[in-house]
Length: 579
Image 1 (cartoon, rainbow, N blue to C red):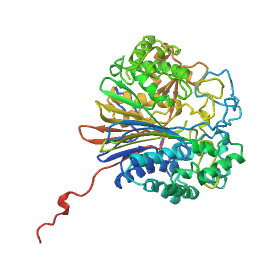
Image 2: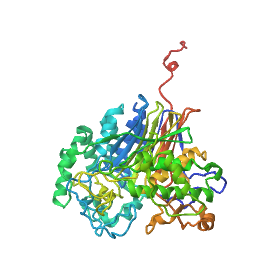
Image 3: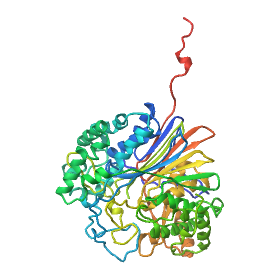
Image 4: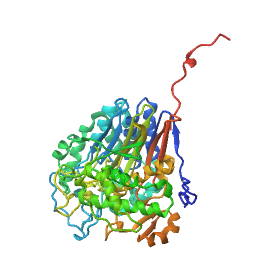
């Protein structure tokens, strides 16, 4: 197998022109953008069967549990933001993970209790990252079933069928999958079931190797027949909790039985008057800070600055620092912490915070959003849209690569390590507590233009997700990029928190080298990296051509796929004169 060439993904030396590494797809009936071509094809198959964007998104997610197993599982967690074409309403679904009831705020020992960093939640024995004490109560399978039953056109069995086929017949490992297995080899080797799947014969799989998952195929077939109850109280759940009990895990059957999906009111904002941003509210911090950042950015003519300008990079970095300062102070499980969402997303609060932004870099402190009232790791993402106007943005995760690395015996199903998303230090807004949802940065987002469907998008990469999504929206709206250009364009990221890796200004792509001097003169500490964050993908509706555009970036195996054509024309069913 040929290895991917070492090439510069894009060239932005010429004004705002972005030369992409991959190509977008354009179709008339529907488009699915997922992080693996076989998963996107699973979604398109649902469209071809007569299903809609909801069926397509969930079929893609099930397929991703097979072909992108390091990122997502039925035993994972996530968020949905979707538009139902029939009602025209935007809705969200919180299917994030919950700490087992037996969890306590002092169950982990932090590496350094003086460390103020957000997302740097390491513990002395890594037990919040690897092993059974890292496993939280999952929401994925229950949510996927709910979405199909409430909004889909096809049966749950049909939607799962492509994943069953891929698990039973197998597929060829991509270079990216093989790379991640290599990264995680020592941890995977500690868990026999997981090692058997990804380290066959004691050797890490290589690109091009066949990956077959017969145990998981049987599990998928059982789920297709019995539904989510097979996990939440049934035999599949029993296999997990028995293994937990035998090996020091905290998860119990009551945790599974008591798990609840939470429909939440989407968080909404406007940008440049014409666009309505609809995203995930807390317990994800993502949507709140996307709107907060856009509210600040619209005080500036960023289009005139230009995408490849020192002025825009500086501005974006300072806006990020303000968002992260507020995130650190205020964000947590909204059932346990009072989150000042209205203030954080208000135009008035943004107007006050932008007064702090000058021509030089500065560390930022939290503001006082409660004084204002508004007008109103490793993960995967699927964006789907159909010609009826159904839109789905779904970000779902195991959290770390291969989650806890634990595979429930005899099931082929990987378990999450979402407990790593809690702050292991007691007394914090995001500290561990039994039955508590941990904080996330996932940002599945839908954008409307003057009330009509326009774009759905999302990404992966932990605390880098909401900056990625915000930047992609600006790329389309202000810089006129295509969806493919928007998700591939070089990223900028910083947290501006002293003593953490996020203190530096991270720049993706070598084109920023010419900016290093000017950025230093403004007080930044820039660092060029080959990649920031994770994969991004999105789907965009062109109201003039009535075509749907899908894009997925170079940072992983993302590949959009679409369906055009349709049934035969009535004339094809008429007989002509005899010959």
